[in-house]
Length: 132
Image (tube, helix red, strand yellow):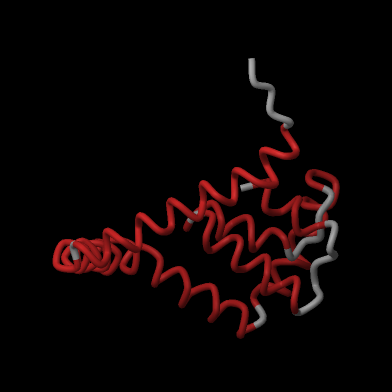
């Protein structure tokens, strides 16, 4: 019976398998360009007709609220609730509210924005992402 070491398998065979998969995908793109192009157009059409209308208003609203300072106001107002309940700053309330209403992509985007602007502590960001 042939016994293969797991570390050796992961280090040697997994990259070879991945390379074969990529090579087959490239080969199919070369052999069937018309079908690949039509499939990509269908995918872009589905994205444009479903994803953009669903998320675009939330992107605009969240950026407006961030720019107008509503996040800071909501953070001060909801600090007494968010700190004992979730152990995150009050600014996380805005992210949680937008995450619940619009979904995980917007919530994660807002968490990253607040993390870059420094109102969120590095330890609070994963907690906020796990709440919604």
